[in-house]
Image 1 (cartoon, rainbow, N blue to C red):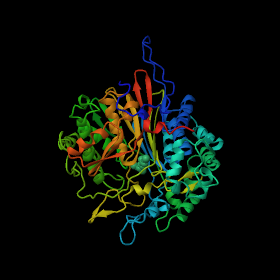
Image 2 (image 1 turned 135 degrees about the vertical axis):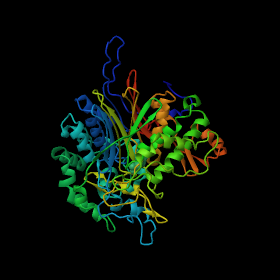
Image 3 (image 1 turned 180 degrees about the vertical axis):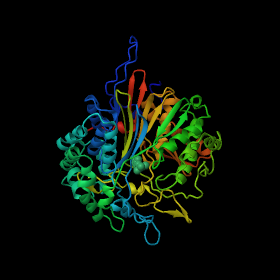
Image 4 (image 1 turned 60 degrees about the vertical axis):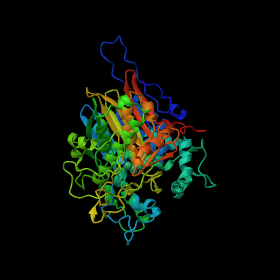
Length: 571
Ligand code: DON
């Protein structure tokens, strides 16, 4: 494994705050390998500690992941929580399953939810920071389903670390302070949230301040004692009435919408990549298909020989992204509502035709979606806005179970609506605002009871013996599948540690613009990429937020995004 790459910025070499839970060496003198102990990687050390505490008590990977999700509701409220949703990929002795806890549109929602009477998009604030954007939260239902399937500890025990954090308090780190400052309008929308996160002067509490959230501790205690029905039944009237009161037009959430919510078990999307099998989340997420396509389209190239400092590799990666994202825009929506040709999209023969579009020396000037086997007759591209507020965590336990869980409230602090001590998501803005284009329907249009398309890509990578080797995911809206695919390439092709793979630059094509991070090795290639036909390359501040666990001969390597690490301090 490479230990560090010379082109990484100093930031990339910082420790991450994601600690490994006792991963003992397998001694050479032992006759049989000792099972690896568990490990947790999350975006906040306090959430990681919550997961580790549950593993230490004998909890399963799923138990620990639930505790992490709950703890993140407290310490990383800008990114995720029980007011939002998520996807869990679980690998265990009973095989591989994904649980879909995606937020759901109210039954009365229609395709014109985000349009005015002229067919124009409603103003941003009306779409995002009102009850219009709030989907029925899914994380508690997902947790309950996961606990029923894979739980080893009592349900209530999983809430203990998060209750302690909310009740006893936690310190504001630089990251939370930065989010409260950057997204002040949304974070401080309600009096309830202002009382928690802002001082008497109306400014965000400073780094190092202690925050308690007694309402959230109460909510957790109620759900811990009564089960998920406390969230979806006992509180349904009160939650629906709050959201309805904040919804400026028809289509408000009702108690029936909340009572009817269910987490859904779905098949994973898997595809081979070299000697590995890459498995992730299918619809309503585009993540699993996009990661699988990007990698499979690159398989015919000797990426290892090119290396991470070659423009040839980054060019190929950009082309593979463009081709995969063209399909995603057209075909992926909630498969319970629209036919999604998942098998066709990852079919090797189809992938070969798509890969053949890649020219190793020049960029495609335009990329259309392909026609995979099973493609519907007509589909239009939607106009989904970009997103920004999510978290990923990975957990493995000593029984060999692995959980890859990405959790979100969509934008930072979600809709800004705050109820029961937590922020409510704005996930419904992940739908296309327009239901059709030139009379052709968009797969990801709003419909009652439907789940919006996601980019989240919780992923598990298996080796040729079927062993879990990498448990990975990311935050960052549409950049998520790109971050995940890049990091898998880092580990598989470049033989990197997980930490170095996560530190590889973000390079992503958005239409005719390419974004990358200033100071990265790719930034230095900007002019040459433009000369290859890649449109204009924009240099942005470092961005990316991935977490991963990598099996090594020394145990599990826990890796957190180096871009986030420096913000996880309390001074
Ligand atoms: O589900 C999705 O794809 C988005 N709602 C995720 C948003 C996100 O990752 C923002 N991250 N920083």
